[in-house]
Image (cartoon, rainbow, N blue to C red):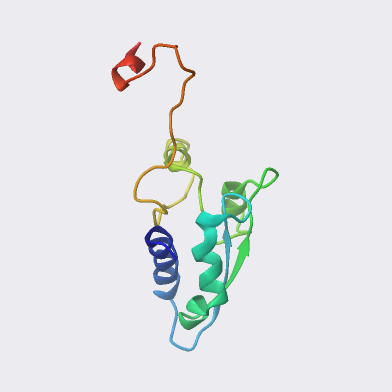
Length: 130
């Protein structure tokens, strides 16, 4: 499990476990932002190797995908945690007074990129000003 996934899994485990008694098993549902893929591996590994159970959690992982919108599922109480796609969703929630809380970052650096076609004059950051 790579470091980024360990941090994410650890944050979810610590957050949920902080409210549990030692003997309690809490059922929670975690929604991913897309179909199962490598960057989600840590979440599935923690379920498979008993990491969640050792912390008193019975975690169901619900895959996202093209027909799944995680934020409304979270707001409706259908899932307990949601792996958002990027911080723009969190900023949008603040702007719209949507009651969400960011509890962990999956990546140390934002994996989104800005791309352009060659020959468009967008070769360095300064070119984006106009």
